[in-house]
Length: 269
Image (cartoon, rainbow, N blue to C red; front, side):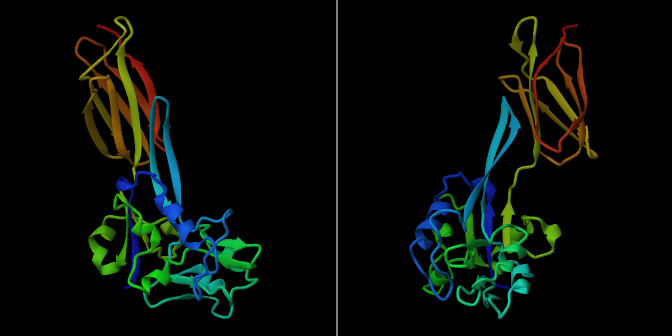
């Protein structure tokens, strides 16, 4: 089975502790036989990707920790010569810092861009899962410093329930990633309903959204806002109804990206 990383996006606050800790652990330090030192600039073996979604005034941000996926069918292992990339018994994929010298094809083999080229040393480098710490019974640094519990690491069977609810990056690549993500937000449709005559928002307006074989219904809040969250990519039709107003319809809303409909006026009857 082996080790896995399990990351709950809903718990990640974007504090960047994991990214800083990885740098602290590997910059200026050699952890042979697993890694030579990471350059101060140009490489992030663990990094935070910031996803800004929607447009003003309806904007949401989520943060996604990224590292090597330690794939079950790792392309880098296949691309390497002389067993320069290997899998440990616990499932971690390791680039041998000695055998991998001048093997730039290892970098090119990774479809996730998780392997970096160290120009000065002439070697490919990436996340090691802090294998040197595991040997002392410790956690990877990124996991150890995560104060919200967003990052977890351990045996696959321990996280069976988490994995059953999670996804991996680009499953279409067929590499079998062993970094699992849960609670990645879906798309959203949002807007604000108002009365242009009285210049006030309309509270408790019924908003009905139909599309992709489903129907959802919510009501505008105190600020006249509505948010349909965690939508799949598709096309939706929106009906807005409020007492004393003519219904408003917006059809063909495309959720390839998140949609901010902005201020939506309603006409009095």
